[in-house]
Image (cartoon, one colour):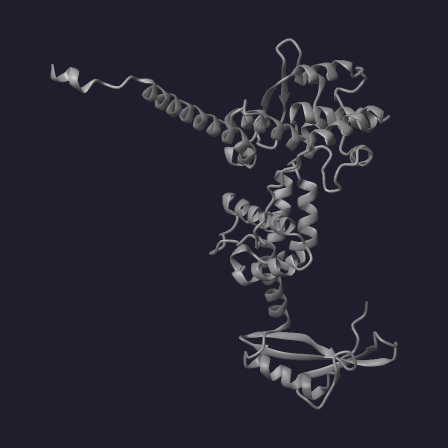
Length: 393
């Protein structure tokens, strides 16, 4: 492309060429400045007549500032912008840490939920900041903002994800951490669901009447074993040892694989399920691992007339635990192992169900002591009086 002729102005070192406006195509002057600084000659674009509102006087003023070193040259500006861009790329922002976290943990349980939490709540609020740039006020504002519309449990999960991302960056030596503790909202998530004998009876009847091939069996397995929903979905044929009477729970919520006893009702149920092509006991589409059955189990719940807030599978896990705890025949340590709880604190939610058992034991102790005391009084009353005169002899 030929170089257009530079047309001089009355200002030294300021010239222009005639081009076309990018707005409407009309003729437009494009101004240039030429100057020498530190023994080096520069020629740079000053701006366009209409687009930049550039005039010869403005271009001359720009030239003077650059000669004096009070304004950087165009190349220096580009270098500065590139330096800023490079610095931005090297910054381990919350979003960049999240991307790296996903790469290293692609199959982590709950990743889909975490992704939704990050995209919906964290990305726009603090995704561009480095952890060290976060202030307690930033987190407080996010917490208050979310609590206006979301449940405390949801807000807790969002802030827990933020904390996990930051801790990941610290552990990988990618960035410094924050100088404060993230304050979590109080969450009362110790909801313990239970069913009365009458409700349990109607549930069993509704399961028997239901035609879904898996929903009823899944609900009965949750009731017989206390297994979690995800554990039932992941249960495979080779996880069941019928000879030794053991169910292997792979990758449970607590982390390490666990073994629980295979009781007779669960054994009979599992043996009654036809063996298909899938390795899973309760397969989903295409013989793959099941991911959902809410519609079918909720239908059974509705048919049984159970409370609306009762969770068909997880609620039956609570029923299983509640029945054992209230029986008085299972201690908390054994219950913890059956439920594969990582720590005893989770099992303590069922401790109050043993109150009646302990009250009966306490009443029994009181009864035994009272009877013993009464018997002693009766024995004292039946003992003959001593003849005082006989002692004198």
